[in-house]
Structures are given as C-alpha cells and as structure tokens.
Length: 83
Image (tube, rainbow, N blue to C red; front, side, top):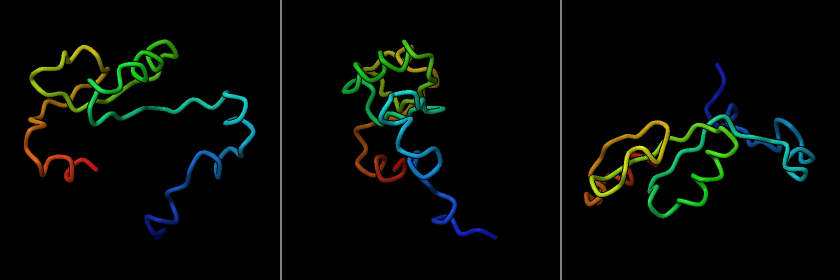
C-alpha cells in the first residue's frame, strides 16, 4: 500500500512547472472555507467552469458555490474539522 504522503503530490510534481507558468493548468475542484472572503476567486472559477465547494454559513448565499456545505462557522472547532 502507498502511504498517504507518497500519494499526495502537487501540480508541479504531476505536470511539471510549465503548465503552471503558462496558466494552462486548471484544477478539478476548488474548496473554500469561507466563500464570503473569496468572492473574486469564486468568480474566476465560475468563468473557467471549475466546480467549487464551500462551507457556507446562514449569512452567505449558498448559490455562490457549486456544492455548498451548510455549517455554522461561529463554532471554533469547525475550522479544525475541515482542514
């Protein structure tokens, strides 16, 4: 069996640095822990048709992300659970 650390590689390990430099590398999905603070990144993902996952609180519109995860962000341990 492979260890988890051996399987986890960055884009530069998988594709080299040229696609990242040229901007031709597109991620499969982008995860946001706080979508309200990352509106410009969500907008960029939407323009490039990249699905987004976001942890949304009751004061955030769940339609901002492709796949919203409802959660109460006021609970302090929640950020440790998702990271």
